[in-house]
Image (cartoon, rainbow, N blue to C red; front, side, top):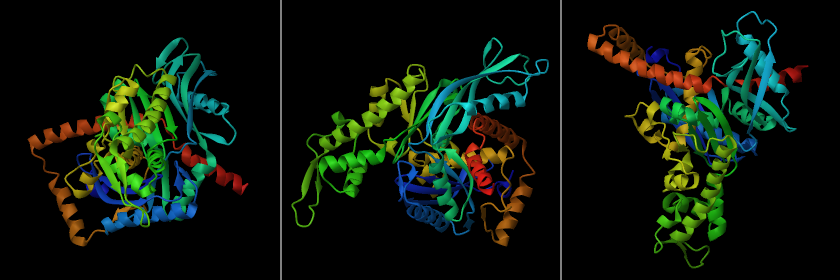
Length: 470
């Protein structure tokens, strides 16, 4: 498939500290070429929840505007939006169903009926079930069945991972995107988007915990035996560290953020006891000297609290000793110095930083800048868009979606390149076969990750509209 046929997917990551818009398109090697990138300071969002609609709209508009400025030929009409926030929760449940047509083999309708039964699960008032992900099935006395379709049996059961959220919090995010004159193609759970960007098939098999330390929340997605076992949103992250520095050292928020980024370390033992930071005094007051060691103690205390939550969630699902792939740290908070050592010390598991590099083409200014854990969620959103496209759920580019305005000579150049590609030397054919095999494995990995989610976020809004019409 040539470039002209590939759609342009735009990911929109609405965070507590930043809003990022990235436009990408796959090249012939299955890697993402970044066509546009925009970043703006986030306003009106706290811990992933929209508190001020107008401010949030302006932040989204600014990020999209910067994305268009980075590539004037680009036009953006629809986006994939990441969703997180402290209101998102998850629980494990078990369901069984005796089949009516026992003589027939198990089909998709049996699975759908079993999943539908789980919507009767009790959840707190104000929350709504937004996704039900089957983990493993049982057919009669046969356990740990990954795909029961085609089997024979009287009773079918499964373990389920149920994700719940505050309905109004989700509607407010979509309302902000709508008012920024963008069409929301889908809403994607941020920990799953981050996981898609930084995980490979070996991680999925070995078992890993993805820990995305963002601005307002720390998102977790835990995989074991190739199955999503647990998701969690921890309501502490980078903003809390900044506030701790601000209150503990008596400085302005901007100064606290700058100190955290420039001089911060997650391990106080590694900080230089003789190093000091000089902060200008306010309104004629003398300058303030701050110990780098004290700064590190403040950061370490909050990071330990976040990692204690991570370990708590792993113990809840009894996976604190069984994840051979360890912990993959991503998000802006993963850039803190010595965070790997602290994570390994607190959890007793191996840790590494997760970069979205494997999916990026590289070699251009955009790609090189975005090979950073900060942008893992946004890259994952684009991958989700391509998953939908490759499985026939999204229309092709040029039919009302995002596209690039090309001059006539550029259109002709693409046509000439496509015609030239029809004549392939034998050695080039062998090389393309190898690339194709690698792409296929990568796509299968993403398919396993995303297929559990059936677009139920968007169904929430369809149900609301139906009720309003009635």
